[in-house]
Image 1 (cartoon, rainbow, N blue to C red):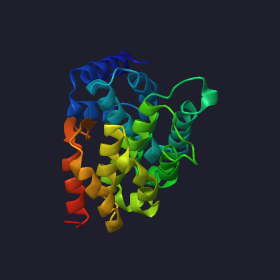
Image 2: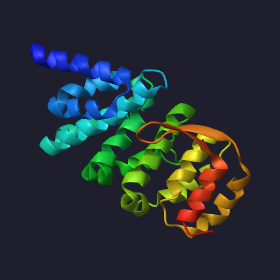
Image 3: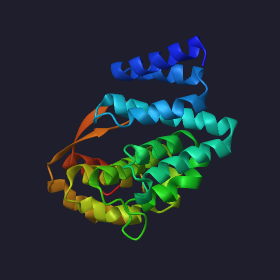
Length: 230
């Protein structure tokens, strides 16, 4: 690796720690995407702070660029993330569902190919993730998919699998499900969402740029307005 590329990779690590998204994306666009994959995945293992989430955003950009150059290589990266969530991998797969979703958010072809797999991670009859933090990651991924690819989110009928989570005991899971189904177009969810209007618990959610403190009742009200329930 040239000195210039090494310097750029050190710069990327520095920007991730500093929490500066625009220059991170500019730098990602200046480096070969294949070279960024492993360093960014290592950043997924950081504590639940901004550095980790910005690495996931940068990863999505890098994989999208890789897909434009060589779709099969991008698929290999996606399969690498899927393998990390498999019990046989021997690992835990921290950040893998979120990273898959971010790649889908930034590349429509990947979204169409892998959206149903992401959905399967929260489905008890699918590839259900037993570990709550990982399952939260998949729920965040579906929220991100709904936010950026609502047509695909509706096409896979994700709301049907998300519906039980609208009454989940875990506030973060419940908030993410509510924020996702707001994009479903399904007015039949109005009654489920109405029940959440009395839930004033909070959840801290990464919304793409930074963290927001979400109150479940307010998220439910916003979702109901978007679905024309009110």
